[in-house]
Length: 353
Image 1: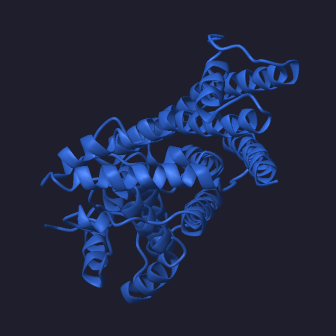
Image 2: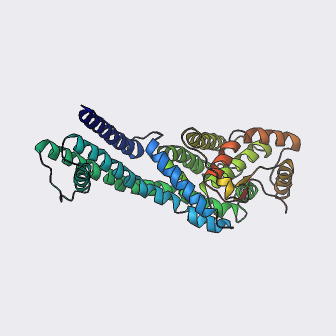
Image 3: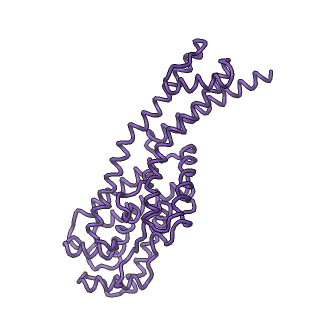
């Protein structure tokens, strides 16, 4: 009686694990929604802790960035490995429950079937049918990952194209002040230009791809000084300063871009707040990734823009209060994502120093 109960438990447990793994793969790569997958979360968090521990041994950001650049690719490759391991043990329980033999023989049959080696043969027709299902699921998991890698890297390339172009426009300082001054010099500050529409589309795609495929958030830019998080902050900072400070007619494209950016950044941030832990990256960072601008920083930016002949409203204090109000729509989400992704240091506003 006890043996029968143990076999029933092994069969039900194995079946549950099989369904869980297959659903995890479907929810990860096929379902176009921001689903939280428990197995994936465990894998990503365990590897993140390990990589953070390794990165903490290096004193400079460049070396830490080199270590963390491997985190997302390694995590992505480890997913099917973990799925296959769970499937192997799950089917081992099924074979043992069906009377194939000892756990050792059941495990050998499971491994052979999963990898489609065919080195161990099943003893009965029903068990042979189960081995075919295991081989099918094993191939399915590998195929899903391989087929979705091009999609992920296409999304990564489109994201980084905007990040690289943004750096060309704001210069080596990478500040919102420099970006506004470039817009003014190029004539796109007062006239309708394509930049805000391009950045709005970028934010919309960020919201879709970085919640349905959250591991994309941790793929680092090819250059150590770049980050999609700091790029998003730069665009939102520039829009907030222009809306609050620059004396010009309302720009519908810029306002839509600002709204799209706030929505995207907050939804990506909420996904990780709700489904994952922001593990202790503060232990490996010597500085905050994105500094909170002070009133003096804003006044310095105001002076720089005035010197660059940018038309500004006369009431500087009113502009500061409006700017500070606009920042509440995105600053906490940006700072959270900056810590989570270990973004490079960046000042939101420029200064005279």
